[in-house]
Image (cartoon, rainbow, N blue to C red):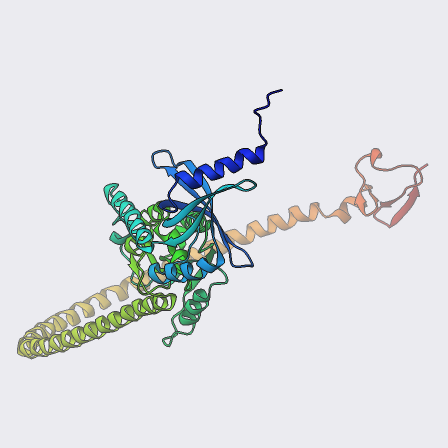
Length: 433
């Protein structure tokens, strides 16, 4: 047994002492927040990481603590300076002292924070995404689309419970002009870690019904600056850029402009402002139609008046010529009328003689026809008398019936059937044996 062995606690105590003696009391450290939690006592517990930028893998990780006495000052200062809360996914620069505890291991004790670094880092990341979208040639694609004159079929992407959605719906459905809008909600999570994928999924659903909509509206209520992080993400904005319908944003922040606001067809400050814009589009179209209608009415009125004047002038110019032409034709008609009267008289005299001869010929032909037909009728009557059934029966013939039908074959009856035999003098009933 080696007498030089020490206990684990002694070893960790020596590590703690060595760290305390060899490291400065505090450092300014740059890291990304991967987890953050504030407990009931007001202490803030974080997990800080550093990623490998090329592979997005984590190359360093450490626990950190901001005690409640410090957190009460750090959090408001950071929020006031940046417009956002401390949240997972953002990079921060903090003043921290390394600590080692025999039971809890290594951690950092944060005593101060530099908000300007986070602002600069956010601005750098934002500009990188903008530059990437421009380099890929998609940055201006959605803004290059043409919004139809009557954007009344609206696909809305928002949270079902968002206050901004209620404002948007109320503004549209209660517009003072009585315009009717077809609105369909595609629900999405509008903040938090799942927001980006949720909004992208909603856009994909809208794409499946693209032909039924004129415009896509992306709206949400108010919130902190950190709630807008998903609207600055690359993939969400990549989808907005290439969406085949114009996208309107009303994210609810008047001063903060996200990348989504930059790449969308139009950015409006609030959901209510989006609704007012859509109403104004229909109003402008109606005013334009009314104006064009009035212009058309005026043009038609002027044209009708000009054509009426021209027609009156034409009639006045034609009147003497028509009178002269009618007078000339009246003389010609009088001459033709006299000639026609003379010709008609001659024709009537000639046709009167022909008519008498034809009448005599017709009377002779009718008498001959009637005589022939009378003889034919006599012959037919004699032939029909020979075929009289009663005369045939008188010659000794008979007709047998079964159930009212003429019996033509023995196979049509069976024993015990009753049959009727009709003779000239009456009917005989028989039973088949």
